[in-house]
Image (cartoon, rainbow over all chains, first blue to last red):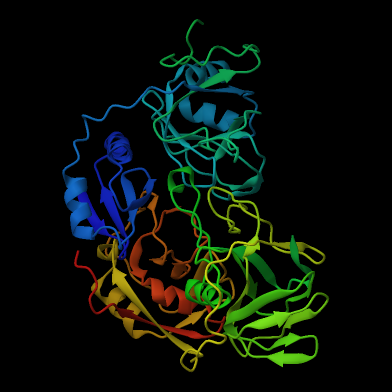
Amino acid sequence: MKILTAGRTARLVEVRDLHEMLELYLALENAAIPGVVDLVPAARTVLVIFDANLTTAADLDDRIGGLSLAATSHEPMAPFLVPTVYDGADLHLVCDLMGMTRSEFIECHTGSQWYVAFGGFTPGFGYLVSDTHTVPVPRLTTPRAKVPAGSVAMAGEFTGIYPRSSPGGWQIIGRTTKALFNLDADPPSQLVPGRSVCFIDAETTPETPSEAPGATCGGGR
Amino acid sequence: MNALQVLEPGALTTIQDRGRTGSGALGVGSAGALDAASASAANRLVGNRPEAAVLEVTMGGFTAVAKRRLLLTVTGADVPVKLDRITHPTGCLIDVREGQKLSLGLPRHGVRSYIAVRGRVDAPLVLGSRSTDTLSNLGPAPLKPDDEIAGGTDTAAFPVADALVPRATPSSTHIVRFTPGPRDNWFTVDAMARLVTHTWTIKPASNRVGIRLDGPRLDRAIDGELTSEGVALGSIQVPLSGPIVFHRDHPVTGGYPVIGVVEADDLNALAQARVGEFIRFMPAHDAPRR
């Protein structure tokens, strides 16, 4: 773990990989260190923003350094189910890249256990990763000026869902009507870091399976 | 109860308070008044709590009619203020009667004006703040002609001063202090030298998201792509197109290395820096060591 200075009121904590980042993020959430006002998790870092009236960088570094990461346990949240129509404009390119037919790709994508690594692109967006989906997908060389809301897309090792219409350079593989961001809900975003996500082929599985805690993706088929 | 009806919003007028915190993991940034010091002074003058929402007017041109008797003030940019035909200075209390017209002209110096109304400007709270975030479209929409602005009744003590001492004489070159890091090691020693010796010019694409700068190339010591990471308010991010100082509506993460982070006080000054004006960077004398 390395702690870098990001101005007078933030520490950038860098760890080895995504797994360690999630452990660190959950440990920071659980620890609720006095003076910490916000956390921004990303691929290998957590930005810890603090109120300099309540704590100091040195004290904070000690507290962060003293966190035991592996010991953190968090309550399993129900997986977030995303019924998806796999008809995206870039689907054939992504299938070619992975050397799969469309149906093989759908089976692989819906059978994979995804989880939210971090957010950040726009409110409601989650960078989703899976241990079984590791072939990196290149971004489009020219981003689209407008990607419709609900688009399911891939880039790098990630799958993401556009919560609202925006410009974007990810390869679109499908679409969903599932709502991702609702200001009246708590938390407003469904895709909080650490939550598991299952994609469901909306064409072959019209009924919504149960969102029971601990359920696995692609189960029962 | 409505306080003001907008006739002309000008280039951009939004409702701002001190911003929202605690939603970074959801991709939600802080927003809030860009010149927080001027917004806070305006609230203090009218006897509001420091967290009260105010109007942030960009480059003047704002006119509105009072819907009831109001006590208000205009701070920030050096802008001509008129109540009907009578000129008022900025930074003083103005007693406005129902039906009177408040108008802000073109600022002589500075960019952003803050209008505080005793009792606060009211709007629904979104994730704990009334601020408009122009990047993620959260909070109240920017004001349009005919919009009615609600006023609250939430006050602190009765005002004890009726005018502010104007700030130091404005200059077209702004001194901006910063703390190096977190990714200063991604740049050559020469790049850091250039950052602090060159006089940077503010580019037209500057806005609430960030102040974009024109100047020499800052060479990298480390090639390749940085994995996206959280960026702090005031971060000087350096993509190939030139440095950008992230202001209150900045994205919460970024994929380009941050060479340094600007001091909070100087972010207030940057909020008043105009396109075409100049910036000199200076390391903060007591910057935290890495």
